Image (cartoon, rainbow, N blue to C red; front, side, top):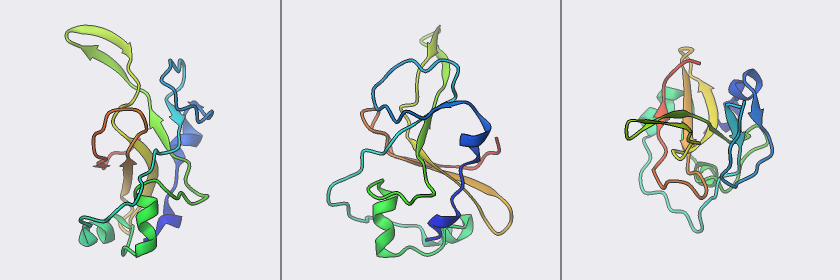
Length: 137
């Protein structure tokens, strides 16, 4: 896969917490916190969408890519992070809620100039599978 093409303009463009602190806490006045993924012991590939990987610019999967996909081995060009958010829960303003969805690895620009961002599993947060998002900043 073309992991070396992953970029992280979000980290340069917005204020963030670069402490890598994995504890739940308030992070006022920042939009993200850097964090290392929890990773997985003995990961196994169950399915991989090769056509989609090519379309978004990641390219072909190789066995060595599995450790990146599960967060066990991050290349130097990737600093993972979780974004902050706030909102309403149960009809009341809940303030800053954190990001229990996933950890972002960054974005990649495909051959058509379209940006893609990917998620991974967040430690000590909700256990919801990652998802691919297509959305400009």
